[in-house]
Amino acid sequence: MHMEADCTNEDQVKDAAAQINRHFGRLNGYYHNAYYQPSTSIADTSLKEWEASLRGTLTSGFLLCKYAAPYMIASGGGAIVNTSSILSSRPRANNAAYGSSKAGLEQLTRIIALEYAPYGIRANAVVPGDFKTEQQLADLGPEHLDGMKKESLVGRSGHPDEINEVAAFLLSDLSSYVTGAIYPVNGGLWV
Image (cartoon, rainbow, N blue to C red):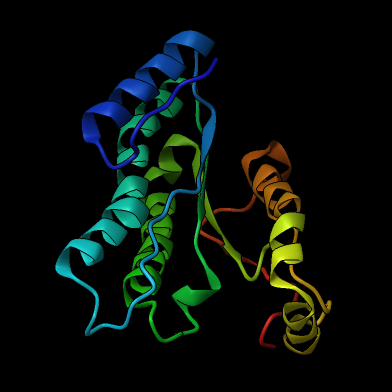
């Protein structure tokens, strides 16, 4: 099944959840990885960019839960994984909208875990550090690699598969006793 939906559009999210449930006969979980990241100072961030970051990062997580959770409840429970960012707790200039949105997403994750635990739904967040594809690493060059050797305990950027494996674990029954957790996956970045 292939489908596209704007995760900031309430009607599209509601319809997507219904279509997935109808197609598979149930909805067991989801991995929320949507965001919008303007890289501007507070003074240079327009209200439109601020609101787009909140909608693309935080509101989208709220909408997915609101419309997917009822199908999970009907199936006997499920798992939700939201993607946060190391910038939710480590401030960096020119990231006010993004960092604030990701911090809010972590709190939303905890509240989802609290409210939906009686229905057998677990909610957790993964908190990536620096992740790069092979192409991104090649484009950035040796300066980035040298910087990561100094900043990360494992001495490199993470590969997207490494965050996906943690998300898959949190979605699976192997993590049946894990909920409300904010899971750092950052190679010891900034320790």
